[in-house]
Length: 341
Image (tube, rainbow, N blue to C red; front, side):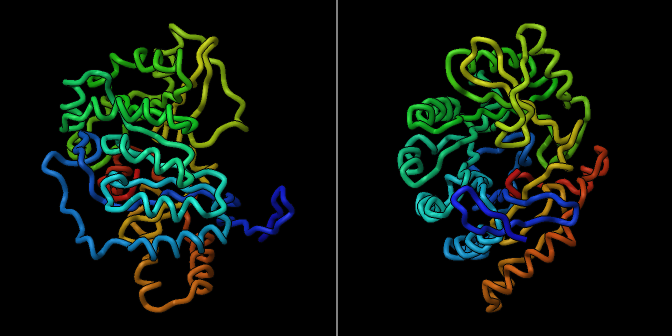
């Protein structure tokens, strides 16, 4: 299927078996991370894959170009932590030359400060920075790393560099950081930050290994906490750039978002696929299976064959939804650092 863009050029449209237009790629470039966040990775870390098993930059560029030709318009670079991948600025430069509607990165921010200028010049337009607490000691406990000051500096540097929007991701956990929710909201008063509260999900981090649903704060409760002090006004849905339910607060420069993959999944409007650093194309974050694109192209297949294979598999294999219950999610959950979250 093809569509026509505003300039009158014919472009492909990638439609799955449930009539969803797939135009968003989350691209994991490494499984390594310099943090050990409690909801993401076990305290003793994980066994990282050998570097020669990762997709090379040439392979990533080739796969991404095929996907862009198929209709991918939005790309978000993820990890692990993408900034720990050697020469990541070179990959950002390569992808930044492609005809994309949106090009972004999700990062913990620790190494971002010294890279942000080159990223911006290479075409990166948006950044999501993970920050789960504004308390330095609590940060060390949650990230198992003393990096608060570096992350905080990167947030402001991103704003100064003109990235728009600068999103701050907070995984809200009952009894862990829920006492800071209103402090995070206040960050959006004078600056155009997008503050995004994300429901805690089962994973293979420490809390995931001994999962307790009491850690979950559902979006409805988060909205109530915020709504008791602030007037939350829904933002026009056509302005959305991701899965967050966006709200504005009168006289605030920034916006507040809520992402609820557990309590109110957004599967019916899912427009994304994921390419792991090992070269597996996954249709869903909570899918145990994936298309081994790396082996396919290393076996000598052409771009045309790759394109046909991906299109067919998206139509036949992308599920209608992820598992609904906590127990089912735990069965398929993995270390988020390995799949890009």
